[in-house]
Amino acid sequence: MIIEIEDLSKSYSLGGSMIHALDHVSFGIEEGEMIAITGPSGSGKSTLMHILGCLDTPDSGIYRLSGENVAGLSSDRLAEIRNQRIGFVFQTFNLLPRLSALENVELPLLYSRHPEARKLAESAMETVGLQDRMKHEPTQLSGGQRQRVAIARAIVTNPAMILADEPTGNLDTRTGEEIMALFHSLNDQGRTIIIVTHEPEVAVRCQRALYIRDGLIRDGVGGH
Image (tube, rainbow, N blue to C red; front, side, top):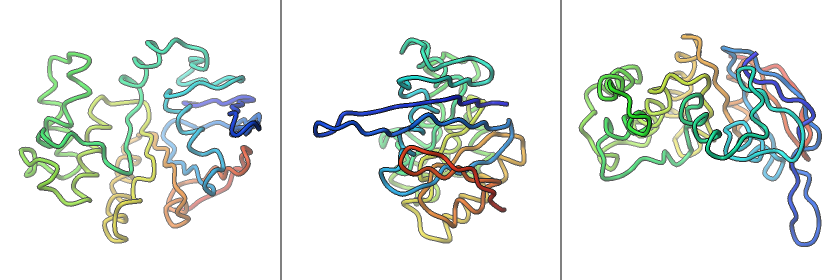
């Protein structure tokens, strides 16, 4: 099992009252699964995504990633885990506008000073079908192409899992379908993919969905 969550809680103080974003939740995700985390705005799914991505830590409980409890690690160690084990894909792409597509994909490897950064970045661009757009800057690409660059950047470090936050949210329906097809292709190669989404049509394309509301989780079965 790649992710084991046991009795995880996270609360915030807002306007003098406590908000229980996650309320003693427990679940697991198997290696190679494609999972949706879904629920209404304010349900706790963003909080859960930040904890799964090692961008935040819980107040209590256990979060094992590939067998290691990361819930109480230092910020430096969490940064290492983010760089080595987690590939992020965001709704707004988060590409640097003055770098080429290839240079954007290469960035995570430059942080770790990988000796074959350029070669691996080119391979990742080929995987997402953009071998003819490597020298283009983000402003010269369509929304769907920019999201493909973001996915290439997410997979270039060969992470244990890909964590995608509303990856089709800024795309039209047809382009969104193409991006979901790409995620399915990556999943078929054995990659673990977690998609945070409020769109039911995205959630149903995953193997199963974790539905979160008021900080509580219900496990459901999706489709393909």
